[in-house]
Image (cartoon, rainbow, N blue to C red; front, side):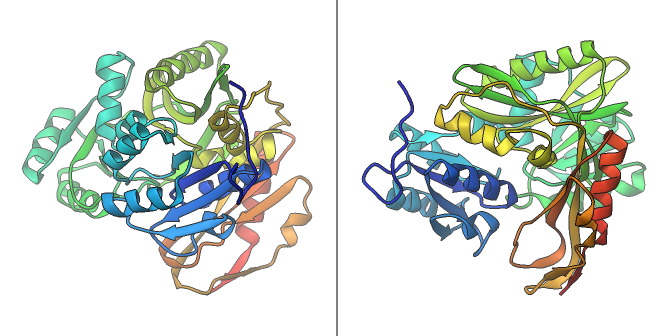
Length: 393
């Protein structure tokens, strides 16, 4: 059946609810509205980025089943798009049973909202290469599994994002602080953690994999740099040998075809000694993919929107080497302003200021993106723009 898109605020309106309204959700909301979709943005705080451009906005605790159920009932969206991991998945299962479309589906959200479900699926069911890993629920178990995995190792809460709660245990002195850090950084509070073998990989990539009604489409691989588990810069394309790219695509296809549903999947992979290892998958646009806002004719957000609405996805036009660099602030303020935009005089540079209502600690507040003659030039241009912008709090 052909896709039908109605008129906002009419009986024919096509309604999409975003559960999570950060900077990635904001770009999805903009793409949806370009197609005349009525957008409802839900988040845990007021004036989140996507709420600023949506038709309706609601503030709820998305881990609270009743609050989530009530807002779904009130708005009656055709499509529900979870943009975060911390969400009442049982409520989404019920919504799916009641005829709402969950992107990509409620099983995928349940699988990927915590690292345990997706890692066991990929490693045990799909038999895809991953690093060695164990899970722990108590500090005593944590100490035991660290001995099994060995040092150094990587520790993450099973539910977290943007590096929150993540650390590297290099010596026995790091064990207790690492456990405490993981307990304070989980999206749903204290709880289970994953302990992973530390792989001295040659490089890592994000392979944006678009599953749509006509098949699977890939964006060019994206490389990135992280600090404390949080992405700082990314570039596209990341250079890699054809056979390793083919193997990366094979693994990504195997994973997303098992998950099913439509949309963009951010598949993270490690490459070490001519081998590809699965790391993680997000069933939504990926923060490292912000670079696609300038490198492609259809960004990851436009591709996600087309896929979830059932629209055709033609061959993606790639404009050339590009990079992104985050604008990250540290401090305490509910009144941030920005200035000194002179670096934007450089050709093929842009910025996105997310409009987040405040900073408490460290927070990603914007991103600079650039096209360059080559990857190094693009990275340099994006970094120059991002770091030259000044701010007041």
